[in-house]
Image (tube, rainbow, N blue to C red):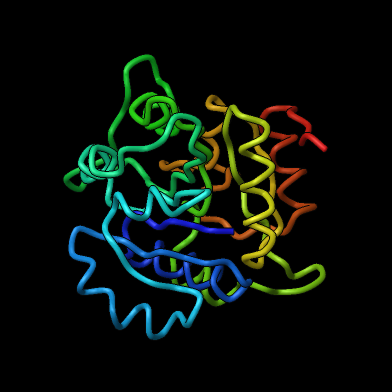
Length: 215
């Protein structure tokens, strides 16, 4: 699969390298793609670098991995296709504080509204890049669950496959409303900042909402 990375900092670089290792073709991008030569060298022959719009045009799926205050600019530069699948890794920290949205909506819903026409799925936002790189590919009962959320079932299926191929157990927490459980601030017993295995993640979600993961 061709995958575009918008924002090639810690999370974007880490996830992109995991996807490239799994055999996908990855285009890393930033506002200054000429600075990504070393990343491409380290990430290997399945990767190359380009502009944000080139990443959008290249990717069957696009990973959005920019700081919160850069989301609007990145989406404008991306020129997303209608129906594009976007994986949103962002967390709503702005100027050192946590942004709160009108009506108490989740950050995922807020970004999905900004990315008009795209099918946005939240994932890869609960753990640090260093931890992701360290634990990716664990086997058996030690494999780490990766929670994700979104409204589009087909897009979520695609994202679940990519999560699995990057070395994690995909775990569907639900839609826009349930995305609160994988976003900061971390609620007691929820998913942000926590390492869970799949059985534990299912039990946690059941205690929080009574929601049953979709098969």
